[in-house]
Image 1: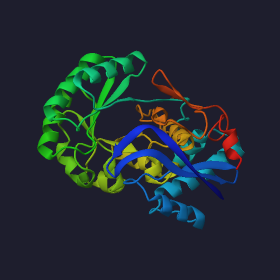
Image 2: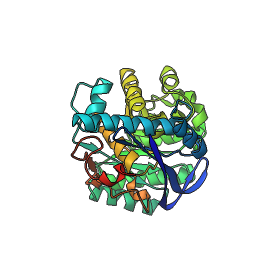
Image 3: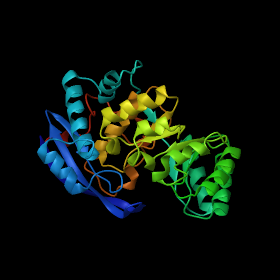
Image 4: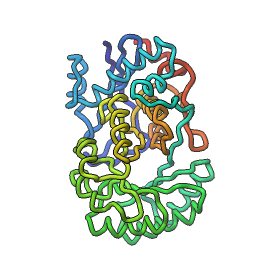
Amino acid sequence: MGIERFSVELARPLDTAAGTIDSRTGFLVRTDGGLGEATPLPGWTESLDECRAALERGTPDDSTPAARHGVSLARTDAAARESGERLCDTLAADAGFADPAADAVPVNATVGDGSVAETADAVRTAVEEGYDCVKVKVGARSPETDEERLRAARDAAGDAAELRADANGAWDAATAERMLDVAAELDFSYVEQPLPAERASDHAALRGRGVGVALDESLSTTSVSAVLDADAADVLVCKPMSLGGPDRTLAAVRRAREAGVECVVTTTIDAVVARLGAVHVAAAVPDVPACGLATGSMLASDLAPDPAPVSEGRIEVPEGPGLGDGLEQLYRP
């Protein structure tokens, strides 16, 4: 197995729970003719040093999910390339999904925490660009302002797009209850991470208010099984990098769906290899809802040109075996 360190710059700095980041640093993983990516994200996975050590030992495990992701993706890519199958078809078969993998994945646009007018303009632009699902970031402003922003978003979208809101764990219980009621009134499909990540089980009390409750950050601190046992979510936001690989992600999706909980697939703002791997994961899920995979534009540089760009709110799965055509130069050290 070969590993190669890389770093790609973000188009603009990103605030996370662990601080502000302006680049993504990780490792390309090459094994048995396959290609993977291990790009740890503080607050979600192991550190960069821990990731490197696990890859060098060749023994990534649950404590090093990014490293495990890189190895798992590379090995599955190699198996798919050897059999002449698309990666998503191999993943679907391995996960036990009966339906064939999709040829394209619907994706959501994401609108930042701008002013009321900026929010409306951004939603309107996304709809004009062909997105039929838009996620609005909330929680950085006062509840009063966020309510205005959600109303402006609905006015701008009309009936043309599904709307979601993402609070990134910013609210207390009382604020969350108030804002979920507003979102329900405006026919938002769900509100993502209303409460802090460590309060995963407390989300159970927020369900049943006419709008779905989705968990994202909580999956970095609480297992999928524990979330399901607590009846804490209507939707899980599944990041293959933080869950430990495509196989672990699809196993989580299967368990969640058996429990009546929907799943969407998104990234940890990864480089093109992991981002494309996440597209294949999403394509393997039957009738997958719009996913958070339109993240390539968040990077100012990348490992290779993106062979699967967003077009009219969808990402086409690339042709060719494994990850697909377009990454040939990365298979060579």
